[in-house]
Length: 130
Image (cartoon, rainbow, N blue to C red; front, side, top):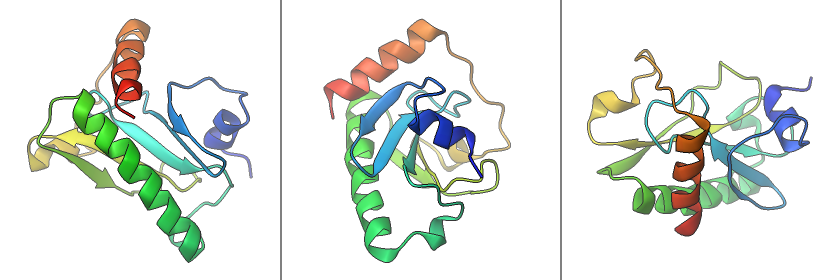
């Protein structure tokens, strides 16, 4: 079953692409909890993160770490929080969220809204540090 993330990978739906390699894609969440909130996905359609083969999951975490380090340099924060919920889109994904307090990663909070220009500026800052 093709998810919205598969359509992003295929280029059918645009995204604010942070980083990409042959296996993974990182892009800004359009319903973020914080500036710089980024999603990391495998390009292969895999619904559940724990169904990803071990070696690939390790590679995904290394890719996510590189992206997180770039976000941390671009967006003022104490840390980059990581969350895997896996219910909202049937395609495995990792949330990388700049945080200053534990409550900053609470998904029941109201999502932020940014303009295209604001998303683009954040994207450029992260890419400069990747």
